[in-house]
Length: 151
Image (tube, rainbow, N blue to C red; front, side, top):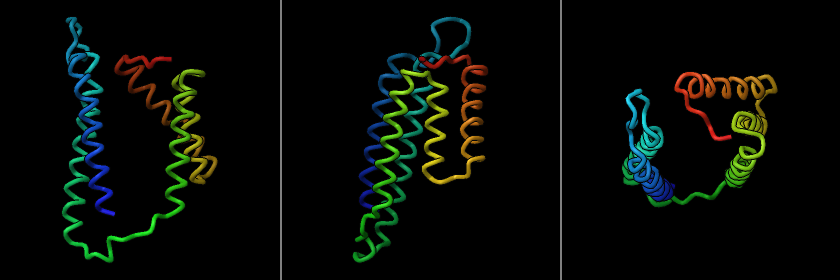
């Protein structure tokens, strides 16, 4: 199990680095004097966050792997976890397609709704969480930071 965490953490570190490189090319600061962050500001720090979390996962897996004995490391793959991963991948792919068809906010609401529905949350929680999630994204990014998502 921890070997898998180590492999996935390395992939996250690489993925984060792949986000950071082009964002540095875009620039972290604005070319104008309005004080708005540059186009690469948000992607750079998202990539940096992914790298940091990947490093934390790698170090944690490395420490825990040393504590394990051989029989503890051998685990059977849980079929429900595999099914969950497949369903979440499908929801993400549909989300990307919906983003182009119905716009960012409606696609985000539908994706959040589907994830909560799949995990059998109550209807009130599912609808409420999806609505509040989209409203927070709108308030923080569109209204607060003046960042428009491509529709």
